[in-house]
Image (cartoon, rainbow, N blue to C red):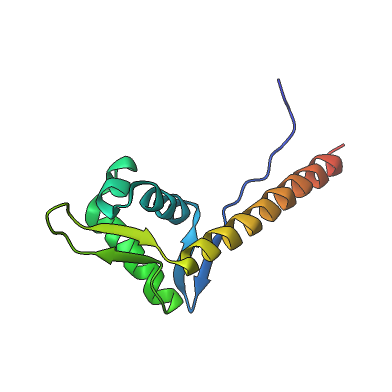
Length: 116
């Protein structure tokens, strides 16, 4: 049995007190890119379309520009695709998340060393 302590934490990026991006929203954006649909992305994450749309809308408002471009339906239905800015936001978030995980590992090592 592993008796070492672990340190946990999550990363959220905010602007003026408004949540911009976190792991869940990154996953939502990636699902939108995969499926080409906010509705399909929401279904795959077991969330309502409204919750997904509200998250997409909130991200765009917080950033000051949209992260998802939508087209209205027609015969084949509408669609959604990520903007270039969305890809930048995802990459930047994932980069800080990697550093954050390393920091948590370092803190856990320090904590465990202090207990010896």
